[in-house]
Length: 391
Image 1 (tube, rainbow, N blue to C red):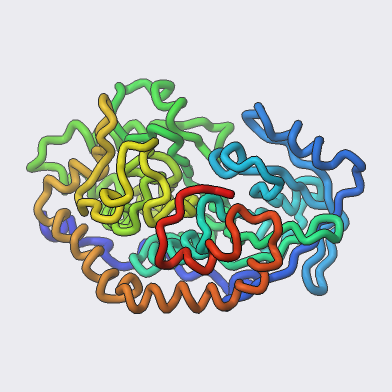
Image 2 (image 1 turned 180 degrees about the vertical axis):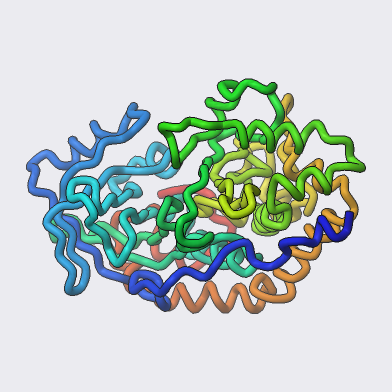
């Protein structure tokens, strides 16, 4: 049991090649130019109520790079509908209208609006903890966004988890199935029919093949294997360490918008080279207690979350956490992730110093951002004050 559990404790992903968007802390200046007089109305129409939002053409400028045409659309759910202002999050599809067009080998980028985060550092710092825990991790930075020469605000720049990400983290030629967990993507077993899982997960690669058999095998093994045989079964199905690291980061940072809470905003990739699933986090702006499970938890409860917490929603289980914690070795590995983070990058003095370093970098861009969700005073007080309302 021990040898099976400990196999794969090394990092679950390769280091990606360098990229000028993400090498070193920076506030990059992106310019989007829309030539359509009603560009805002078109963006709204292309996004609201669309299962597959439509991109709008725009020109893109960054430093010496100019692209006549890229695709732009809104993104997000909470960050879009939860804030009435114009500072929406954007997804940039670089090759939507020009085949093969990229920004230094990347064809998609995300500009996140810092929803519910007056500090402006939750998302970036939580991703950095994911990397410290050995997870495949999206790279981040900051962008001062201008739209039609008007400063639109400071955004967190986040790499897309897509085919380019897969090959850079798992090796050239990797082309396995990538799923995203949607809300209530609990990894519970609903039966052997692949269609039973369509409402809870989104297949992001190889959509035409539409083969969900590996996912069904995963949830079957996770839920239905007797406890004594669980390590041997799971060793052939998944990188258990990546799952334990993901859950440890979620609970350590009180990221209840992820698997342990709302049960969304995570990815799992079926790796070609060993036919095992690897897990990765996504959309971390609501870490450090922003999401209170629809009012179910008080601020004090969020501040003192049990390390083995899972959602109390009736009728749902969290087998990726609860079944793994039943295995003593897995439980020890899980706590080990927390302990290593708390002794390293998540040590309060280290983490707060990192946050303040980033806040010093972005402060001029925050102050100049008249579309942001919080005031300058709330930005300054964000590290020591409970702030729960958007202006």
